[in-house]
Image 1 (cartoon, one colour):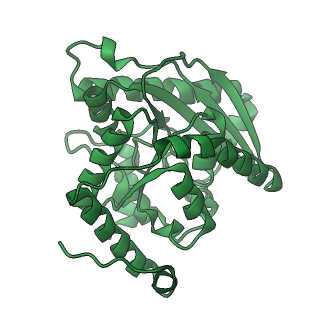
Image 2 (cartoon, rainbow, N blue to C red):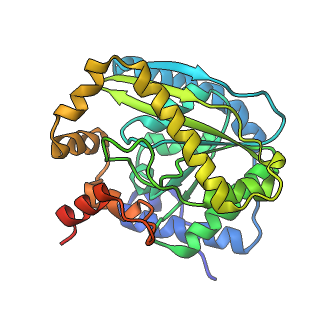
Image 3 (tube, one colour):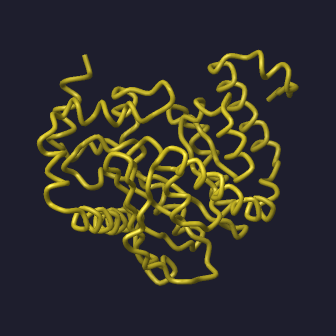
Length: 297
């Protein structure tokens, strides 16, 4: 595969779509030519500065962050932080909540190619991929395993899409998190996150120690992880006063979903959410069917 690296000036003249195609080719070239992920140690040291920047940004945005629960167990194992996905600033708030260095597993990253957040994520460490490209997804999985096998951690959103269903705590999960954990022996840390206006709430569960789960299959671990993530989400819902939670029930579905879309600074819509969420052909979720009927023509 031929790949010609472009300089900064050339990159600045490229459109978002051109940058997306360029960086996907670059990832493929580096992977096929055995170029390893470098400077994991440096990125770990940079992470504390990143968290400080994120905190300052949150304060300027007049957002609050409350960690209602943190049951993590100290371990020398690599860790996969597996978090529910609500859109907006949930990635920044999750980073601030966990504090520990972690590479971000990031699908469809083109929104950050011309943004300062892209530079910060590069310095922190992230594994980007295009969700609609099978080869790019495979490379991202292999790179994540490389990070975990070299003492790094991973932050991932196993639902693969924002949860735009108001009454479902956790959507169906992709199997990748469980598969990578079993292959590397990494612990999985389930996380729930929720947002009410400018207030974020996070609940962090106890480690799922995969090395102790002898004989467990990927599908079984995925189901276990989903249960644990749902428990963390319920912790948040139970923490909030009933009258606060009922606001969502009183809000129309369309308004609820539009508020989620409006939190995003990039060109992302409900159809993009539907395209990236996991769809199990053997299970029909009434809320997902309703969404598909409304938005898929």
